[in-house]
Length: 407
Ligand SMILES: C[S@@+](CC[C@H](N)C(=O)[O-])C[C@H]1O[C@@H](n2cnc3c(N)ncnc32)[C@H](O)[C@@H]1O
Image 1 (tube, helix red, strand yellow):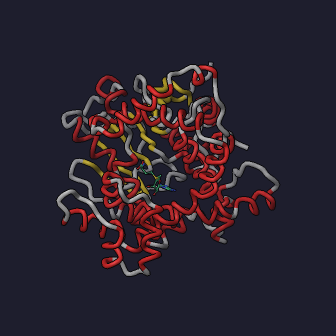
Image 2: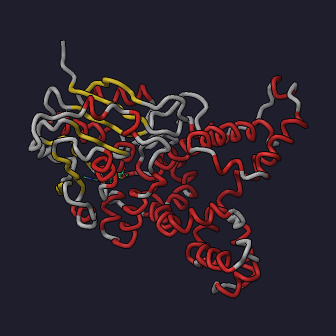
């Protein structure tokens, strides 16, 4: 069983250093920080560091009872968010807030806007903690699709059925893409991506979420990977970068905007129904391609795979990588843009991500060793793990790889 189980359920401990701290001063500092608007001025990296520190602080001072109750009842909040999306509660909050001078909203007002029993409305509103303005703004931008995304992944129903799944499968870490907890819960034999393809409404939600800034790191890879040094081609007709399974092409667009004069072609590859909905500007080519088939572009300077391999257990991941290795020239690079899970102090979001991959795809978020082992199986070797200085365990890294030459 993977360590997320431990990470997500770990009970608090107190260490000696905590006991000898000046608690009144600590509490006062926290109150000062949260009552001023100073926190709004933090940059994303500082914000992530502070969040991790608070997470550790909470895990050390939360009582076992509080922790147990919080873990047990988190599912209520998750479903409340989904209900709020369906009720259009976020839109109602934003509308009402815009009418008020101080941006305040009374729960009672919302009952007039939302088609639900006022008591139910009140419960949902309180469960999502509506008073945080940034939260509401965030949800208005992302939630409709995000809510649908998690719904279609059937993570909640898959989670609820995990005890039955493990009982039936013998408490083994899932590693079969066609026999995941999601398949078990959905009663579906077809893979998740095929299932989505037959449901355009949900496919749109998924692709929108994939392209959203929420899924882009606090530090862009273009700032910590030496693009201009590593990605050079001799002539503009050569392929510079192929984004394999690139969704709607958000990453190639950003690349072109950042490096408009870097010579070479940029190619976006994905399945037909995804390519058909991408709206990318000129200068980026789109190519329908199933990454289990022979890679049609040979000898590109670099192939880029962002958050693709975590959707696949090792067997399929090796197949995808092998098709790329067959197409690579000795001077081609493969750039894998994913998490390399830390061994300790795993941020809870990263642990949740790992569990989601297991539930939906029988897959995982890999650590450094797991990446190296996987790549070796496909005849590739890691040249370097690139990661920005001081970044959190949640930050995605660039794993730069080349063809393994024996000898
Ligand atoms: C998790 S999304 C990542 C999308 C994008 N790289 C990003 O990071 O936003 C996985 C992508 O793989 C694509 N995909 C799934 N199966 C595929 C296949 N057999 N061949 C090509 N693309 C596939 C999906 O359509 C989706 O766009």
